[in-house]
Image (cartoon, rainbow, N blue to C red):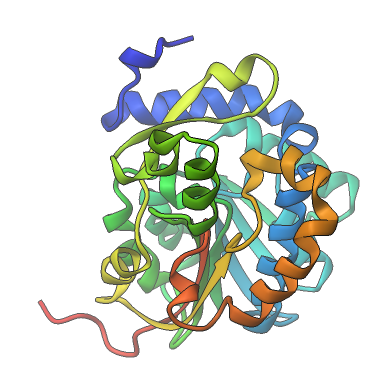
Length: 292
């Protein structure tokens, strides 16, 4: 396992490091990561956005599918999914689960980094998808995120949606919480780029870190605006803890209950929608290609 000081933050060595880590995580991902109580809450919110964007009979792309939790769920809703991930271990897990659930006809898996999603055009053709999505910070681990919009746009049909969640550069809850417990460096840790983040919060893989990049909502919008139009912005984990504080959330859940209701009311309103730990973006493919 690489020492923290020698971890590459770009180039092929970075992608190899990322792939190796998630290959190792794949067998325990559903237990270690997906079962996190905060992660479950986030997924419910994100799925609501997915159902508003996608409908039965459509075909969509997932970038960074992990073990296929969302892809399999969408397939059960009658939506065809081409799920992509940089990790062969993750792709293999999705394939196994799809077979066990008799969903092979609704779900196809391909091993691809986010920056290479455009390669799907060689197999499926241009404008062959009705939308795309990415969840849980997969885009934060793509150092060449600026390449993704131009790769993705030709794959989507006219005005198709792209729904994604991106980890914010600044989290209102984390700033207040870590300042309150006198840990100011933790409060503002994501202002520097890239930041080493453990791929797991338990077991030996909590020492396996991946350099990740964080963006303000304005920065993310600018990365996509040449190819996509932003139609909706929503904060997640605005007044409640992020996944790394799940123990605090579980212990103090009655206290957070009214804050969850407040977050539901304010999460799509400015300026609150720009202060969550995660931000949900709903984009639409631009009707005309960007000028050259």
